[in-house]
Length: 196
Image (cartoon, rainbow, N blue to C red; front, top):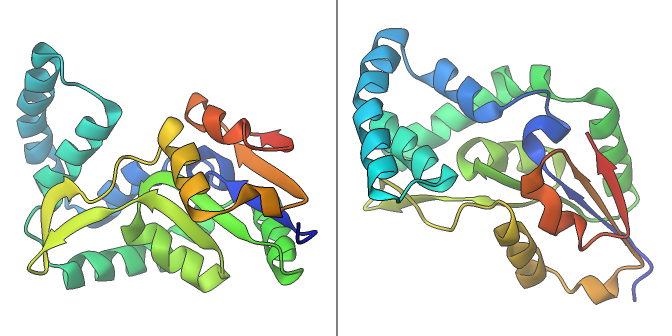
C-alpha cells in the first residue's frame, strides 16, 4: 500500500454542469448541417430500435458517424482542442475541480472516467495533469471511421477499465465522484462516494 488516495471522477454531470456531448455537437456542427443530419439520424435510430440493437453506445456512435465520419485525426483533434479551450471552462463545477486539483498537487492520482470521447477529454486532462479512461474514437489511415476504438466507457465498462489500469489494492483510500446509474459499478470500487 502506498498510502495514497485514488480519485475516480465522472465527467458529464459530475465535473461539469450538463452534458458535453450535445454541447460539442452544437459547437462544431453548423445548424443547417445539424438539422439535415438530424433528419437522417431518425432513420438510423429507427433501424436500431426495430432490429433490437439499440444501445446508448450505438446511438452515440451513429451521431458521431453522421457528422464526423471521414474527418481527419488532425481535424477532429483541432475541434476537440478548441472546444476544450473555449467551452469546457464554463461547464465545470469550480469547487469539485479545485478539490481534484488539490489532490493532484498532493501527488494523489486523479482519473477522469467517462463515456464521452477522448477528442475533447484528452486535452482537458493533459492540461490538468489528470489521467483519463474514456470512450476512444477509431481512426484508420488518419480518418475517423465513425466507430469507437474501445467499448463505451459506462457502467460495468468503467469498472473494467479502472481495474485494467490500476492495482486498487495499492491505495489506502479510493474516492469516487459521479452522478448517474452509469457510475454505479465505479462506486462499488470506492471507499467513499460523492454523488452530484
